Image (cartoon, rainbow, N blue to C red; front, side, top):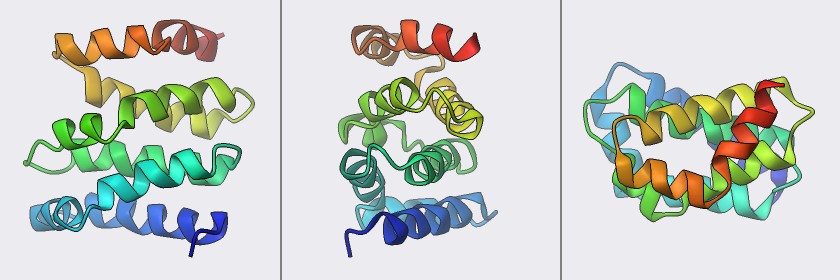
Length: 132
């Protein structure tokens, strides 16, 4: 189901699974293309603050709370660009801004290539704007 409500709930569940202390959950999410599903939900429901909030939270947890580095899969699926788009589109939502910035911190930390990709996507400007 492509509805925003179903996509939001799916992202919330993936966020929860990735938050679990069981590292196998993050691996399982990646193996069934869960990361691609999250990024796809972000693209399809650009105007839904709830979808964007939980999708960014899920991407953040998939990177932070698991020993397996999912950064490459998130970047390859267009996750960096989707997160930058989210920050740009949802300036009115502090929750969306917070989760999106958290996701960017995790996805770009100590990675020159990802930092350059964020800059190319206009990420520097949108992060500074989010801080105002």
